[in-house]
Length: 230
Length: 48
Image (tube, rainbow over all chains, first blue to last red; front, top):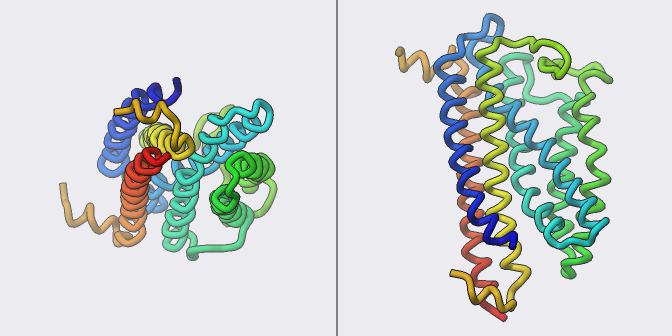
């Protein structure tokens, strides 16, 4: 059964997250050198990029669970979708905040309404909308269906965010990392950034598993097997 | 290790530590709220 399995697995991801974060933060703050152009403030990248990637990735995972929930009517898919939303929203908000703090000293402004920043803000609204919608509908099955639709339809925003720097003239810089070409950033900086990304990924999994266990307990209120726990 | 240089971050302390601090705060708040939810879910679960 999923509940006990999730209970055994989440601490592993939590430990992985802490270890990767400690190493990543150490390299990012103490080992990676001062940037030639941006000085020290570039170090925000070690939070900003992992947070932005997680905000986008988590929404896609939610949409995937939405497809599963609608196609196979499995309750666990809908519950995982619900469990992921707050964490995705948190990372998206963090990406916007850290981006603003990086933007002011480097590019002169906390915010512009360019394609990437606007579409990321929309992503935050989508998360907030998903959470509000699923809480507003009393009937859990209908709430799941409505949430799944919002997650699926809203996921069109993710490629928009991703390609925005290519399709439009944005203040936000173009992509530095590619799957086909060598990265345009120093190896040690890339290492720290990737470590932080995987730390945030492991953290998200741990938190989502804990949250889905709480959701299972909430939904199964009154069921006999709950009495057999602890 | 020059700590005062480290904390100053080239004069950009607000931007750098405002970011890392927000990260720490966001994680802490999420974990605290999640633990509260787990506790209250057990209360809900015990009611039938």
